[in-house]
Image (cartoon, rainbow, N blue to C red; front, top):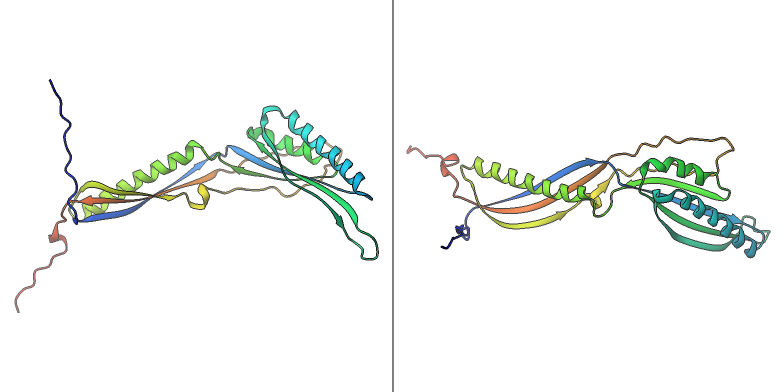
Length: 234
């Protein structure tokens, strides 16, 4: 006993087509926060600057390690040792800096982490900025919602001409606007806190995820009576 799969006829070449752009915008909670930490030390000689910079950087690492699994990654983004001249009549002073990016996956821990880092000497803290993971399910949802939007629009256009869709001809990924993510918000740069115990109540902003797709459909012959006008003899 055999079964057959019904064959759908291919759209007729050169027939009417409809081209649409489907779009979708999702509002979702962020998944990660980035916090930038810069250790900056000025001293009378390079050796002292480097030693103090190393000690401060070790304190930064200790705070990050103390946060446990809240800190997903700790990455050094820049290192600099240079002479800084503030008075042309005096020799320059050695300055050593180390910049670090902390990626935080537990967003409820961001406030306490920023406070602990901000209490360290010779440390500047900037952030947080918020984002989704590159492989976030929200990105896929936005793309699929954009496809659904494209199909809906194409059907509406075809119906407006008294026709219907007969086949899919082309799908083009229009990409994700603005890299797919927007609305990253930063806190102001902060230096060391005073001895009191501050608390930062940080509320992550929702992220906009944009999906877009361009789709070309074949459609049946339109109803020409919708636009054809009879010309009466004069």
